[in-house]
Image 1: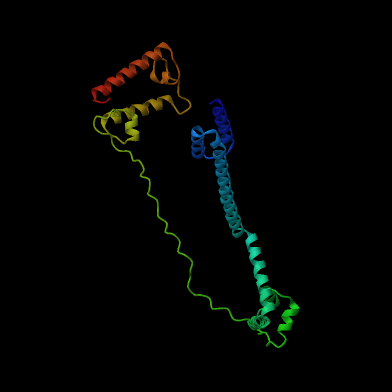
Image 2 (image 1 turned 135 degrees about the horizontal axis):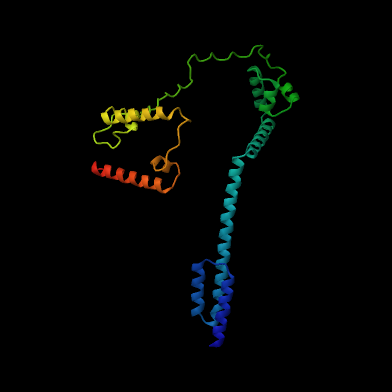
Length: 261
């Protein structure tokens, strides 16, 4: 019994050394756990054969993939163009050796159409001496090149895309304040909202009088202690704090009386 356990352990170690997929490795492991000692070599041989088959399949797959990649590389680069040109020249050379009369007919035809030596060399893939030997009895080359076709009088330039004007931004226009607005009775309501009610007009008049009394800009006197403007300017003395607290309470009470939060 101990010998069988030792043999199975050794077989499991040999199985783990093989690179098998998880499902195949589990299947062979179950077979080893149920097998007798004389069946273990056969199971290990089957596992090795399975690994070889898998390796061959992977090698074949990657070989085909590499072949496809190389083919795509040749088709998508200048190497493919060079190979195609060389193959074309080789076919032309074979054709010249097998059917020289057809090559001579092509040379005479191209010469009659006004082709020069450079174009004949590029098309026939031969030397100047061979081209001249094939054009010994050919008719003279036309003195004038064939006239170009008349230009198309139509204009094929696409029409420009229509310019769609963007929507104009609706500018804010000041409007009179609604009834019960908290900004009534302030210079802001008169100056920026064009409200001409009696409280706004009176506030505007008093503000202008104050500005005239203070003088031009830059010559105004600094705010006095115990005022909201002094607190806003950064002063935190007791008088300025008390004035700010009173102003805030009055503002909240005024809004509460008008039904606003």
